View (cartoon, rainbow, N blue to C red):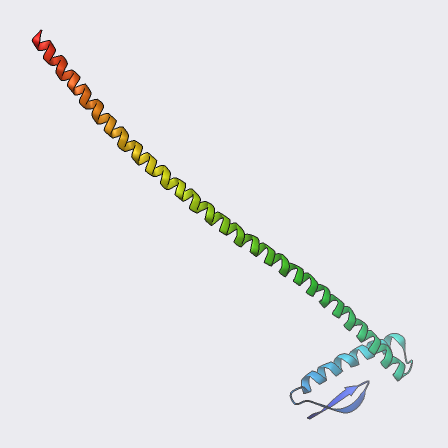
Length: 148
């Protein structure tokens, strides 16, 4: 345990605290002394005990206000966290649906490419046969023309 000399209401006190907490105790005491002095200046000399009680009540009031604000912020943070989880879940579902849709579209595209290739092949075959038929007709026409 460490001993710390502090000053409160212009009086010196020797307080004990855990090792390493000396500076924290000094800061807390300085803060308390400031609040006490502000109230003393504001309310006048109404007695040390009464002034200490009012100072304590004021600090506890500030503490509870802060505690309410922290609780409210925690609730808001929890709500935001829940909304984030919901959005994340929706995004994952959306991605899964889009991946499935993309696979389906790729399958349709592959089928369409295959159909186009088959139609091109059929077209080329028909074109070749038509060309051959036309060449025969031309050849036959030339033969007929020579015969006549």
